[in-house]
Image (cartoon, rainbow, N blue to C red; front, side, top):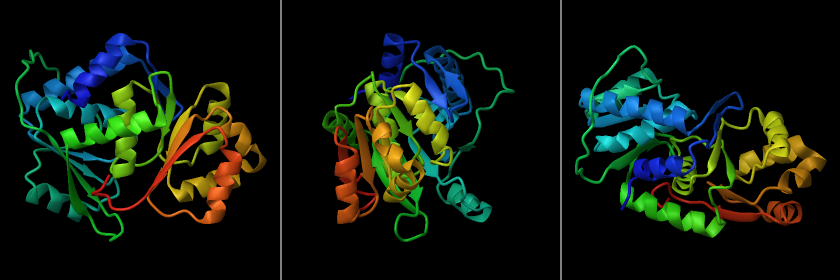
Length: 275
């Protein structure tokens, strides 16, 4: 089964001008991503980083760290960005994390030829609080999340011509699975940290073809408040969205059916382990 990294490379080679938009400010085409990705892979291998920790931050840098980890890492720990220093050091020490990734390092110049090698199946370990409000390690193997990603993409009829808003935290299993689906299908990505800039996101969606998004019920409530009578205008181009993490009431379901008549909606909630 091909890794996310190999699938990403294949999609970029087929469409090198594919644009990734970071927080409505910076755009990256395929060549920009490949250049940074190759540097990160060399950095990981040169420093023999087998166990990598990535602090959550919805950004292109985060995505590239995550993809670069396919080259060498056996385990990738995905840690909340607001984890306090004491807890962070404890997680790092107990799990023998070799390196904690934040921003992409720029000072080191590396000249290293990367040889492909057979590696064991990688594991993602999510340090997410879930419903217990305390960091817990949830292990997800590569073959499992690729399988789930393919099922979801097929269900939503997601493809390379879609543009999806990724606003869910990547340390959350729900946000991470949406990222994986976008990488699998070569979907154009708009990355942002939450919905704090939703008025700008709405403007972007009208000027461009935003076709997909993912939300938790609280995000849905925010859209309802901010858009008011413009909801149908927003949903007109929206092909699909995934709604998860918790239960939604009957009145909200009726509101969804009324305002997202042409949108395919997939709703689920439950254990992090299940996703």
